[in-house]
Length: 402
Image 1 (cartoon, rainbow, N blue to C red):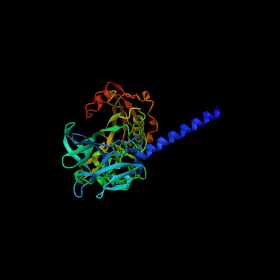
Image 2: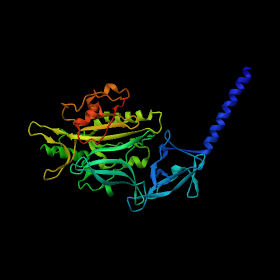
Image 3: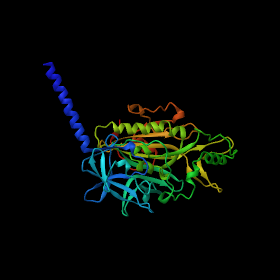
Image 4: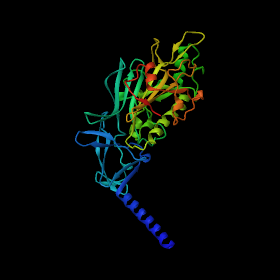
């Protein structure tokens, strides 16, 4: 009897292995972490209305059934426009038919570089702010929008950025890629690329306060400087083209480096982990990230001054350093939300909180705001922070997102 029972178990194992192998032969699974270089943007077309959505991975993989197709988007040679590069059809066993050839999807690359993002001014926001949609132009008439920014064109600092984070977010690439300052991203009229260089930051801030240009009082490498802080982080998207898209100056503010690489980074990771733990694969979070106030420094030898990374010969300032960064996370399914605030001025102590701290209500938050060297932050109800920060877009919630 025991022998028969053991034989039955072995037979079941063999059957399960056979079914899994058949599934593997009939499916295509492409690891997103293996997609590097000038790979296309992978999209699915919505039948009947000519619109597209970016393919959503499953546990870090593009998964297609045999015979299923995915659309590949690549740039055209001389424009900030992308086009349909072709359809890749799953042949099974992780192989695809593309342009009559059988190959792996990771080996299909764009001949004119990676897909080009574009920025379009689409209106006004928060008074005189420019509403800018950032995404991928597909053909002449369709923008696959990924991020919406409200941008202060006078100070060259975004007021806030908004996007929808998908439950499928995964696979953040390591390393760095170039920042975009050409095409529709190149209208700033000031040298945004160079103002974030450590030497430039040191000279600018020292000149503001009339001290020796090489003084380390305000800026000193390798850790005491302002970095290019993305409002929408590259790791909030899954695919290489989307991650490169976040490297644009409409999405960038000066962030104190220990702050950016400390509790701010932990907060971003916590939000992604919170969403990924959801059992509903269709769940998404609406995330708003913005700035508030201008960092100031009051020296004993002069009056208080607004801190900025650019100042021309006539004293005009731009790329102003925000005193606070805030982030609101809204779950549209439950209509609950939570707000976070972080203090971005390393030269003074925060004297007044913008809202009542309710971090104790969040079990999923792992930052350590007792470590001031990593950035001081706290949590608020959405209604509470809206009373203080007036440029937050209209967001109505019914409770706290625990």
